[in-house]
Image (tube, rainbow, N blue to C red; front, side):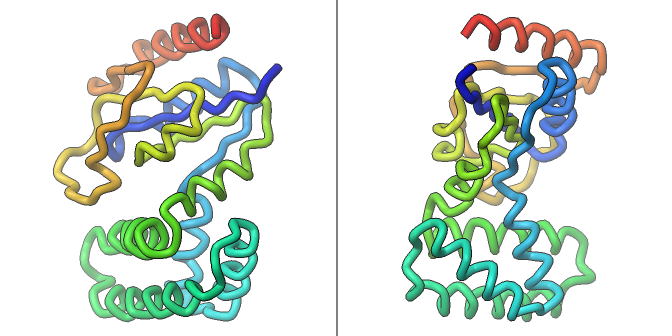
Length: 196
């Protein structure tokens, strides 16, 4: 079998993770891959102000992705500034999500390397089935063999990562969060995938 990458996209709280779990339970062993996995690790280190560990991790990832080391000081400076801004307002609701968006999009995607998270995820896609439940940008969708748009979720987030128009080959309407409909949709998806 050739390795397959299946991506889920949609608004926050649309049910992408839930549906990807259903898919994994239907197809059997699959590797869960996340564009945001390394981002969460970076942000944890920024919030803890563990600059030594973060620097080592960035050096490793920059080398892995062939990102010029000359971009490292600019990234560290931006992360330090974001940490200061975050500390000043961390009691406000939603600020952790804000920090994730700033680090993920503004620092790494827009400043360091547009495909930074994509390349790290691509290197992790080593299973027969690779399931990604956080496709947010068109370049991320391009590495997927199949992209599933999940309808539903919360409106009103104006960040770029929540407002992309991603072309999907399959749409699952999860607005009513009905488990039976979700199960039926995943069974139908598995039939489609096995035909490809």
